[in-house]
Amino acid sequence: MDELRRKYIRARRALSAEDNQKRSTSACRLLMGTEEYKNARTIMIYKAARGELSLALLEDCAERDSKTLLYPLCIEDHKMLALKPDGPEAFQKGSFGIGEPVAERSAIISPEDIDLVVCPCAAFDEELYRLGMGGGYYDRFLPGCVNADICAIAFEVQKGTDIPHEAWDYPVHFIVTEERIYR
Image 1 (cartoon, rainbow, N blue to C red):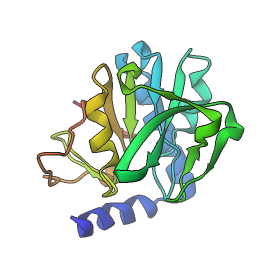
Image 2 (cartoon, rainbow, N blue to C red):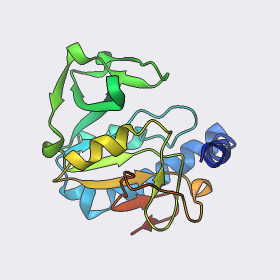
Image 3 (tube, rainbow, N blue to C red):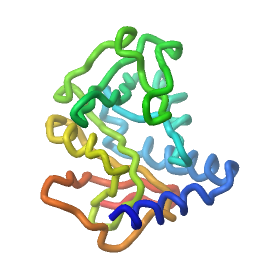
Image 4 (cartoon, helix red, strand yellow):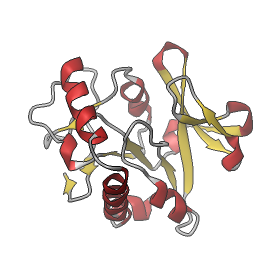
């Protein structure tokens, strides 16, 4: 599974910065056109790192769209919290080099209070399985999001066939790329 993960991470990293931005913008527009996004009030997203699809457009539009944005904070035992930061200065580089909210300057939001979770991934398939980065943080967190629609977002170059999955892997409800929505 590690080799498969590396293959698709290389594919997304091969995109130029300009191409990444263009594709990220297209994917965000598709996501913001979904009923799941339109109906959501509280949305958990992520800060892109290492060539991931950027959600900058969604972040820019969230306030206009009356959305509350939450961000993940990875903690001990491969667990994750959903935090609402108190402004843009409430972020720092985390242990994985990813921008994450500072716990002391953020509110912890219960997973049951989230309407939409937008997950990053290394790869995905049309069966709605995502291959994460290997830590299992989202797979442990998502079962608690009982009222949320779960979405993965990625570039088309990250699409594979028959992504391996285990019993504990949590499938998503839909996947958004720069080209289409998989349901």
